[in-house]
Image 1 (cartoon, helix red, strand yellow):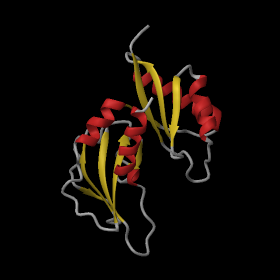
Image 2: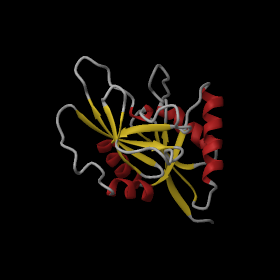
Image 3: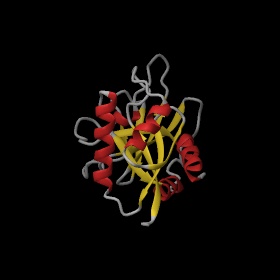
Image 4: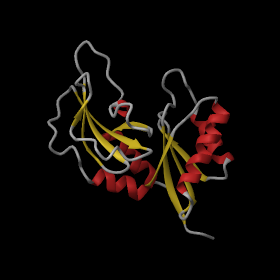
Length: 185
């Protein structure tokens, strides 16, 4: 038997904007693909599963996205990470210099593609409520400011139309909890 690895699928567009999916159904959809040890964490589209460590990740991502789209009737971009990759991302501690106030939210945006090479950081959103303070090839670290009288922007949209990939965001403290849950059997 090949070496098995736990993957975390961060799903975009699940249980937001009227697109409701019960976690039981989501687990079943992943099971339909022959993935094992399928578990979910909270209602925001975090799915843990086990697969061959040598799997072609791009092909697996495509299979998951196609199956979810066919089954749910809309596109669900998927960003796959291993437990070790998420641990390495969180260990970077990208927000250590950020002053925390009640208006500040720390977000990790999981990316399907690296940010454009010419993108200069830090990058602020046009509304001034989001600031990308750092990035790796697979993640962007965004500080979100809740501005009085304004609805919050989606941190996954701060890169503008020049970014051809997809992103899905999680609060940093939630990503820490996702890692802990993924490490459990």
